[in-house]
Image (cartoon, rainbow, N blue to C red; front, top):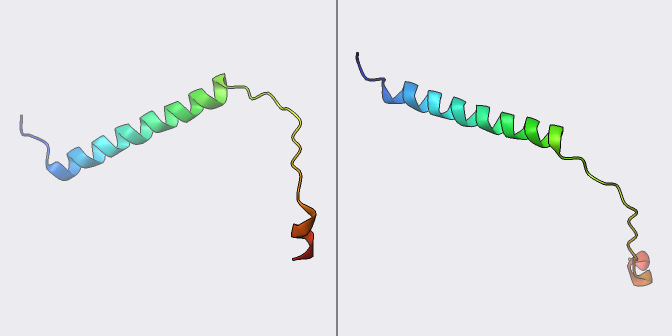
Length: 50
């Protein structure tokens, strides 16, 4: 069996990394449920005059 050329090996490695990243994102979307909460932020009156 001949060893794989380095370019093919690099492409396969990058494809595996992309697949793992995709699986990680799908897992985050599936299992993480954010809890909405009210948000207030006060803006100083001096910033309106600019």
